[in-house]
Length: 403
Image (cartoon, rainbow, N blue to C red; front, side):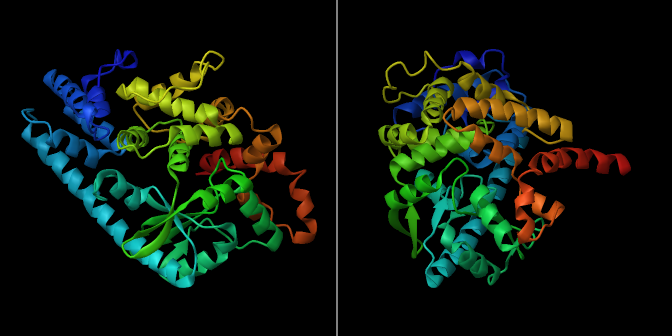
């Protein structure tokens, strides 16, 4: 893993974090070990390194990467802390595996087809060990017509809706399902979060149906599941990372590991991306793997980059180097960040219509709680969207001023 130009000026701790943000295989393992040795030899700020591991959610992977490099010396307090953090990551993963198995069995019993996204199953596929990869929540995808059935199934097994959720009228719920993409649940006993998806953020209804049609039947711990096709997992990882501007090295490390294991189909992903207007999304994923890890990749389409903005790579590379994750300290800061993300999303998804962009910007299910209109007056939400959008930005500031 040769040192790349974009790393110039970064600290040894950051370079070590990047070097340990995935588990290299095959020909890339030797390069990774060289990068780890080089970063540790100059004496990184270990407190900074530990903060970066937490920031990028790669404590388990980093400890595994360091542990397999012979001859490197780590300070004993650092080794102990890394070991303890890795153990905590493994305990959380074991708990998630148990909860996921229980949910999948319940869905199987209820006859609900289910497609797990990322999480413990993905970790097991990549590392043969579901405990290595840090996961904040469980992500399950079901077809839209099964949402109510899945909700009932979850609620009967100690999962409850997020406290921000509220009852909706039939037209409000229909609009919610058309414009949103998941519902959040929490486990009553463990506090674990589960996101129940019926589409991905960037998908059309036709795209979701096609993804399900291409999915592959599989079994995990005796439970029947559907898994993404190699082309769709490639597109999913690139789209998910792009949607979040790749601000966590964990997402890029997942993509690198999947590529190194031969689990990705870049050609199929580019074919689907061409149909769905996501070619830039896939090209950015390929570009980042080359720029960050120096990985060799399939040939890009002819003239892939000349007509595309240099910001497509510069923005995520900067996001990786930012010391903190994006936060929402104030409504003004949130607005500025939303506008920046909006500009970057327009580069990634240039084919999206302005109607779709405005719908994403203005539509929020919270509007139905702010202004609870009956279905007979549902039409009023459309002309009031701008007013409700402004209210969402003004209200947090007013609440803080009154505290």
